[in-house]
Image 1 (cartoon, rainbow, N blue to C red):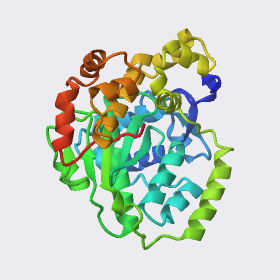
Image 2: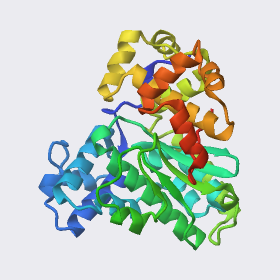
Image 3: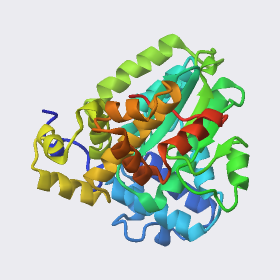
Image 4: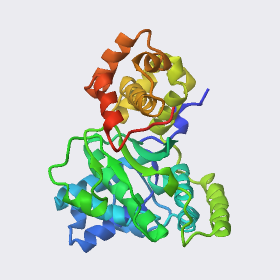
Length: 354
């Protein structure tokens, strides 16, 4: 049994340090001459809270700050500009470890391992296969309305950090789980021209040959020391993995066993009704989370293993390929054959580990 869901971070739990990433929003508001009263609206926060030490806020409060700032400024570049300032951040030893990363591989592993502190709202997940590395993002606390802005912010943060630490721009390609943006100028300025919309997850792709190239700022000893301290600090921190992150991991690990609400709830030590309530608080439900993981795994199997419908259906626990085909169209809006043909011809393929 994984343990009671109450062990994991909920959207309303105070576990995000106000003086770290949320404070950047206040700085940006001042720099943009944005009314701080509007920034703090409906958050329950006061300006003096930002001057305290070790003040924690919830993901809901952080998301409200972002909603107020992005909605109030109404500027197409806000999410990108916030991303430019986001990483390595000022989160103590874990940020110092990022600064000392020897290469892209180490930097991305640090980001993924310590994302609860470095990027608490979205979870970065790494996958490698056939010479391609993919960093894809899943929602940690349920914020569908803000999802496009959050993705832009986090992707920009990774691109800017890696360009600085590596000393040169890296050849990223980008997939977005949304329709094409009305204006892509800011995407091109901050991310580059390799953009693909109408995908089925939000991902950054790069050739695996870039993963182990030495970075000029890298220091193996300093990075290892900072990581040891960061891991010790993590045991004392209030930032824990979110329910949605842990649920995604569980479903991914057990995807071949056809997870159900009942057996998943049992693994988390709660009743199905309680799990439903937890997920509803995060704006989602069990079937949506299961379908998301199934979609990601199907994409991985189609692209990296060249599975046909029957093989993917069997892997995902479907009784027959026809049932899988109908389900896949419900998940993605496309039949497996249409999506698979697109993957085989697209220059920016999609991956997910399984």
